[in-house]
Image (cartoon, rainbow, N blue to C red; front, top):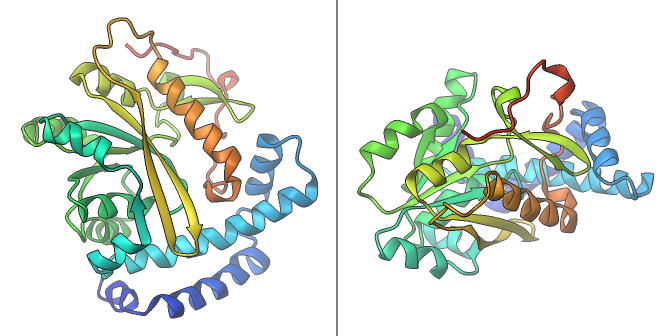
Length: 290
């Protein structure tokens, strides 16, 4: 962690110089997950030309290395600098619920710099429990926990979320979920068409909203320019949920995410093996949330 903190004190121009070097190596020397990225892009955008796909891939690699150095910078960036570089366009829609004593769910994705999202909310007065999937490396897990908690966000491993819901039940806050990840048990996921492919989603997001009567927001991220982002909240659903059909919350999330990805394709995490599962792999696929 000491090494990461030392790196984090480097000014942004130096960090972006490091990013440029990393870009060259992962794009042209190591060709990091090149086949996965190109295959994902080709199948998600069947109408785009090979040249368009190549340009999106190149921009994706540049954005990816920027995210790496920006995440390191999170350990020491000042609240003032973070507010300047990450702007929430309509924080009042969340703050109104919190002021009324209501906890809310915010569904995001691996889009732009998702690692800045919780800290950028905390520094403008929005408390956040940031739910994440633990890393397999204990050392990296410890480092990332400290980085993510730098400005007061509460990193919460997925498996500890039920406990946190009890321990922190009296604290109005945002429960931030990166909801585009692959379910640990895909056959029990909620399957939908997403970017032209049959795709499982974590059903837990909707289950949590319904069981706790929590409103659900989608957070769209936009890269304004290098190192500067905007986040905009939009309401997906709010209780009562009795008349809302099963899966409607997840389907609304899918619709908003898909639309955002199509507008800004290079900002999503195309190196993620999102479609390594398909229904045919399993003897039984559960489509129910209950």
